[in-house]
Amino acid sequence: MKRKRGQAQNAQKTPSRSPSAVPTPASEASQQSTPAPPSRRKGHRALRQQQLVDQLSDDPERGQDDLAAHIWDDGETAAQTPSKPRRGRKKKEKELSPMPQNLPPNERYFWENRPGANKTSNNTLPPNVLLNHDDFFTEKDDHEDPHEQELRFLLSLHEAAFEQWSFELSNKFNLCLYGYGSKRTLTDSFAEYLADTIKPSPKIVMVNGFVPNLTPVDILNAVAGTIIPVHIKLPSSAANLLDLILETLDSQPPKSPIFLFINSIDAASIRRPNTQAILATLASQESIRMISTADTPNFPLLWDVSLRTKFKFLFHDCTTFVPFSAEMDTVETVNELLGRSGRRLGGRDGIGFVLRSLPENARHLFRILVAGQIASSVDDGLQENDVLKKADANKAAGVEYRVLYHKAREELVCSTEHQLRTLLKEFYDHQMVESQRDALGTERLLVPFRQEELESLLEDLVE
Image (cartoon, rainbow, N blue to C red; front, side, top):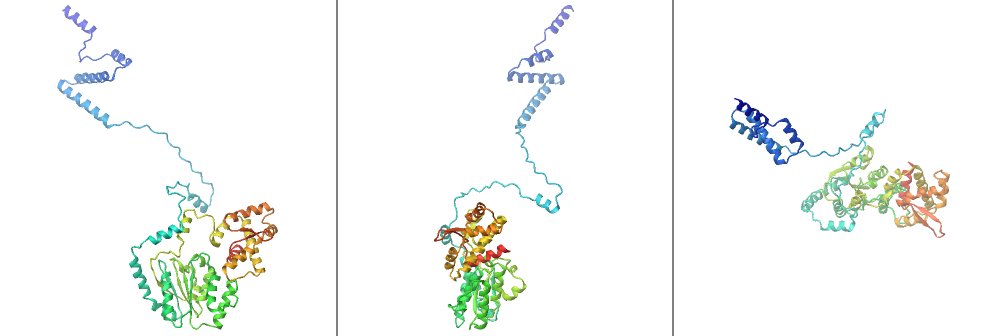
């Protein structure tokens, strides 16, 4: 008995190294204080798990199976759970400017729908490559329309109606041809048909309304050239010239009607109300038959009831699907859309856009310059019918710089010469004003437009 008690005490003093022994807290503390290599840490963890299973399970084989399943589940969980990436620094959102208080409803609408910041374009085209006329015409000549036969067949269908159109014109009606596509080829063919079928051969006037600088005086000069003798001097204003044409038609009516063709009656150059009123007056005459074409879908909005009554139009759908190669300047249009067309303005419409963006003193100064140039041209008797002679006359009849300066001071446009030069600089940049010196070396300023265009500009500035 004494031997057995001594052996039991020795067993308590000296712990067994068998795998089933449970480690003491002191041993765990020593293990945590001294880091072990990874292989030993895995072995210790497996040993503790095996000891725990043996204590909880009576069946050792079942404990081994549970331990293997537990280790396998831990491996799959570790493989299926990837480590989360580190979060970057959160970007600070740009704070919107607060809306002002006490805004009326209309101003609040525009505030809430104001445009945002400009976005960077993804356009990678080289900015220095522009479309020029040589390349455009080369590509146009090389292009083959796959629907050329269909377009010719459609044109032949319209040409089959020439006899009906001629009958409608003989009954004192006028024609308006509308629809998508250029109709120049169709009107040229119809003009040839009228010249061949009507005897004696009638007088035919062809006007292209899509010309950018076309004025009412140009149209009236073309009509007057067919009924007024050459030795009679034509007036320079559109109103006087129209009165002369109407008096001539009443006193000396032609034997056969005058056929007036107007391509693109809804073009921008002749879309103004006074121009449409002049055309309606011509169309209402018994000695004139008007054949016009329209390219835009909302062209009837140009005329009120009175003008439409004067025109006496019969409308025909003449869709051709032919490209607007003559009616539209493709090169300039593309360059303007790209913002690379240069700073030269095209006609009085471009000058109007610039003047709207300038201060009031600049508009008054330009009005004084235009009025002075018109007055000097009238005083010197510079009223020629030829376009080139008019241009040369305007160059010689520019306003003297000192005279412009004194008139500007009288109307309180500027007080010093430095202010005058500052206002003129914007005109020079847009090539609205040219500076030249005469034979005596005097500086003269002029607006490089014809007499009729200057009068139209002055009317717009006065309004």
